[in-house]
Image 1 (cartoon, chains in turn purple, red):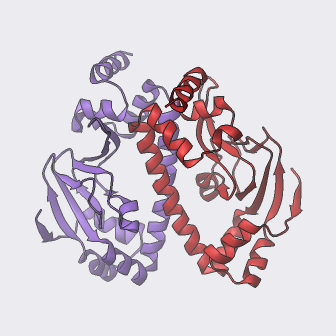
Image 2 (tube, rainbow over the protein chains, first blue to last red):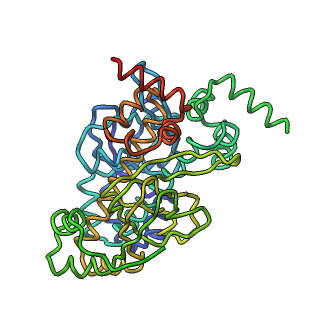
Image 3 (cartoon, helix red, strand yellow):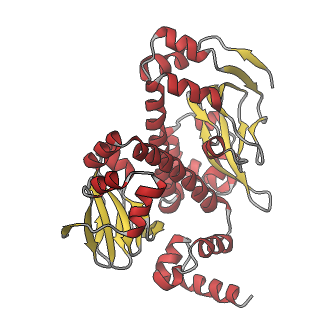
Length: 199
Length: 199
């Protein structure tokens, strides 16, 4: 994996200056701790057994987080698109090896910061720490929602929820991945899609 | 629901003094903001549409968090036992109505603190805030694990994981609730249990 100094990216700059509220010079200082990392399609940002020690901002592309069962079956937990953060927070904060696979679905460009640098930035800029705490809460809510969906919605309802949140997903993610995310077989997803698009 | 001043409870006191590290007089100050709440079996701590504004420590008993689908089917997200905290964090922190049901499975005794008081305690005692942040992380990890389980383990594996974590669950929770948690029908759970106990 190649590492380069990054050039400021618009959405990334906006996140730090507008959303988090850093001053321009503070943002310049923070972004200098990130490195750009290119991950070609099908390559891995994280594999089971590795300790995750980077906070990775998805600057461009699409990736998936999945687990493998004992029979080698893949189970997709979520997809990520531009302006999302990826990584295994449990592994980052506990230092334990991850159980997760994070793989590029399209060619990806990440902006990555080592966890130790991230902690140093947090103590230097309390606004960053506040934002990250709030983000943890929001992450947690989205997990509760995801669990509620997996447990209580029908396949059709979960399909509609997915395309409502990510209208372009079928243009960017292979059908078999979407089927895995919805826990159905690819032919069933094709039929469901055909039926609902005919409505 | 009756509200009373609480008497210090051993596990509760230990949480605040040993785990969180408050001094005795700080603990006395904090616990004076909690109220004891008795919830008889089948009664609700939270119903969909209500805004959750309490952090509730389960001092005694067992409760379940579940959602209802459009057909009125119950889907149990998790059980809670002594020394757990309950509530809908999304509703607490956003002020939006909850979608969750939290119901007593046994007669329960909760120690509850209003969210505004909890925030005041957090700013007065940074150790409490640190503990709560770390707890949020751990909550988040457990949700990731739960999602991984729901997505990728077989029913038998999920059953074994459950009784491994809560060996007494069949003594305390009705079979149909455990079946709902595992997403199987009660007769299938009975057969599974019989088969595995015979091993």
